[in-house]
Image (cartoon, rainbow, N blue to C red; front, side, top):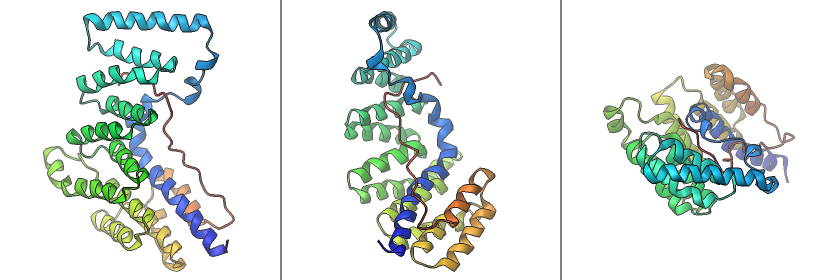
Length: 285
């Protein structure tokens, strides 16, 4: 592998990660509370009989409550978490569906339902749940990012691009109905990354330029465009763009921007830190 090829491969890999990390500041507060660390969920095989019996008794208690009060939020959440502890992921679908339908203003429940479908290798139903969220919350970034990921995994990049473009087309109307309902900057940022993955460099750069036009103080398009200029071998322009991105970046992102600007072929590629944990229990928002 030539030095040039190695450098491009590393930069390509980092683009995906930095996209998620630059969105993470807005996503984390929305969905982070729903997911316990995997270490708290992965002990099913080691549970002794008495512990499993205790969990089953608790499940029976919640089921009894739901017979008289089918939409009891506490009982539904408890049932989901306990069934997850027993590794009965499929049996969490029904209570999660009830939570999502009963509390539509709390998209975290439907997000958890969709992620459960993903775990059960049912992307079709997962996609349907994400789309339900977007009918009432068209700018909900976690759902947008997730459905785009499904389309890309299924090798349907045009569908992913269409979702993002449609979101942008309706953003003005949505924001008139509810202020800041759609963060067009973040949607464009995701769109630019999809273009980049599809090697549509001109479209990606045009997307970043539109971001700069709409919000000249957003550091992300400068960084994204700089990375693409790196790939093209336009190092001088890339440096100027990185310098501008660094100037505008919030303090928590400056180190990441510096690291990307200093990227060299000798450095190992990043791994994706944004993988969703499995058997996600639910907490009451």
